[in-house]
Structure formats: structure tokens, C-alpha cells
Length: 337
Ligand code: EPU
Image (cartoon, rainbow, N blue to C red):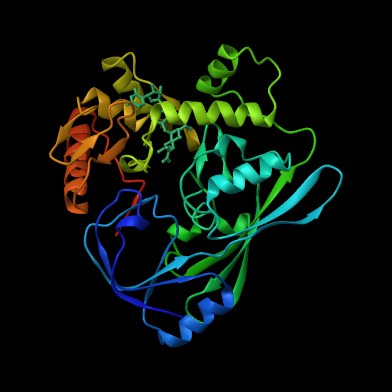
């Protein structure tokens, strides 16, 4: 197991922030990870996946381990369903493409989401009406405390909107080695209700879409709205869409009759953070190397050479201005390290 010291994480985070880890190693099996746990003698470890939902605001004084467990297999199947197992280090979109090639349905709406399979359940990735929790069976994780293997079933993960037990009680305690998804082989349950998907399919004259058509529609929508991290540093949505009490929403609606909204959980109302940020005039804003993306205000970008502190500074200014205008406090969706 090779450790690198003073290791630049710049190519390992999609924001492209040049932070350094005191020590860094990549691991591609559970045995390797266990060996590493012995070597590091209980010192705290931080696990890195695809680095696509993270903002480094300083160097990481400690040990960073990259989850690089590969492999996709069908573990079991019957006439209608297949249980697919993927390594935590597999690129998420590669898994989506593999499933499409094998004609397995369920994650086509989650096409082109950056990041790794192991990170996907942590924030319950979601897009266009589907979340990973909808097809999730269970996962196998290694305890960073004692190296033991623990299975987390669907209900044990306590999935919520961009949320799970791995962001709460279990935060920083596990290395997600394998994720198991229950996918359809026949009678795919297509989710095309989301406005942008419906419109794209209609524009392409597709009346009876397949899982492949849905994936292509999602890819075209995402590519038109979200910056490609390979070209422009970003971590997708920077903030969560806030849910506010119905009474607060009604008062806001009086003032802003065109406010966009969706039903939230427990009778609350979900308001798109992108809309709030745009109303405050931030969309397309740029100062030095940081900015608010001009096609989707929820995305903060690094035009090149920005520090994590600069991105975080812009985020703070946006949070303050949205709070001042709407009385709603945005919370980051990305992990701030
Ligand atoms: N909107 C604006 N201005 C903007 C951006 C959005 O007015 O600058 C409005 C849109 O017109 C639309 C509404 O807000 O009416 C929703 O916009 P969009 O469909 O682009 O989705 P979103 O709520 O901004 C969420 C997810 C995305 C996911 C899309 C599609 C969160 C934090 N973000 O964004 O996820 O791709 O829905 O399902 O929930 C991510 O998590 O990194 C991510 C990209």
C-alpha cells in the first residue's frame, strides 16, 4: 500500500481546487483497505469518491483514501428483475451505461450524474423524478473503526432528499465497498413526468420511449444546463432546494405570484434554490475566478485557479442575499471540507 505525502487533490475534485492532503492512498479492494486500517493505526481517515460533491476550503491535514473498488456484476436474477452489484469506485455514469447495454431499467433518469457508485447513496443522488433510493436494495460497507463488514438495507440507510444516515450518525464511519440495485428486465417503469423530459421526448417525436430514449433525453437536458466539470470546475447544484412551511410559502406567493414551487415533504413546499438565486440577480455573476453559472444559478463555478475559500465566499454572499430578500436560508448541498 503506497502512501503519497503532500498530495495535490486538484485532479480528484471536479471544482478543480488545488488542495493538498497530508497523506493520500487509493484502494481497490476490501483487503487493501483493511491492510491500510492496520497501517494507519486508528488515525482518522477521510474517504474520497469521485470528488464531484465536495469543496475543499483548505488543505486536508490527515489521510485521504480514494475508493477505487471496481467491477459490475449481476448477482441474481429472475424473469423480471436483476440484482446488480457495483464496486464503490465505479464511475456512476459508466454503471448507467452498463445497465442500458444489458437492457436493465431504473437508473436511466440518473444518466450523466458525475461521481462514483460508493458516493451515490450518501447523498441519495436524484434527478428528473428518480432517486437512487427507488432502486436501492442494500450496500456493503467496511467500518473504519475495526474493518468489519456491515450490510445496510434500504430502510437502514434512512434516505431523504439528498440525505441518508451516511450524512448523519454514520458520517465518516464507513467505506462503501459495494452497492446493490434492484433493476427491471421487463416492464420498465419509465419516469417521464418531469417537464423537461416530456418536452425533449416530444420534440424528438418519441411517443413510446424506451429506457435508452429517456437516458438520451436526460443527457441532452443536463448537457444544455449544467457545465461539464472537465471544462469548467463545478460540483453540480451547490445548494439544496429549500422546503418551507406552507404559510410562509403563501405569504411569499402574494408578493411573488410567479414563484416556482413543488410539493415538499410533510405538507411543506419546495422552492427551487436556482429560482431564488436568479431573482437576487446572481445568475451569470462573475468576480475574479468564481461565478454563478449563467444557465443554471444553482451551480457555482471555478473559472480556473480559484481557491475553495473564494468559492465559499461567493456561496456565503448568495446565502445572505437570498435570506435578506426571501427570508429563506439556503444550505449547501456539497460537502465542505
Ligand atoms: N430555475 C430558475 N433559475 C435557475 C435555475 C432553475 O428559475 O437559474 C427554475 C427552473 O426554471 C425550474 C426550477 O427552477 O422551474 C427547477 O430547475 P431544474 O429543473 O433545473 O432543477 P433544480 O431544482 O435546479 C434539481 C437538482 C439537480 C437535478 C435537477 C433535475 C437539487 C439541489 N438539484 O435542480 O441535481 O439534476 O433538479 O431533477 O435538488 C445536483 O444535485 O447536483 C443536481 C444537479
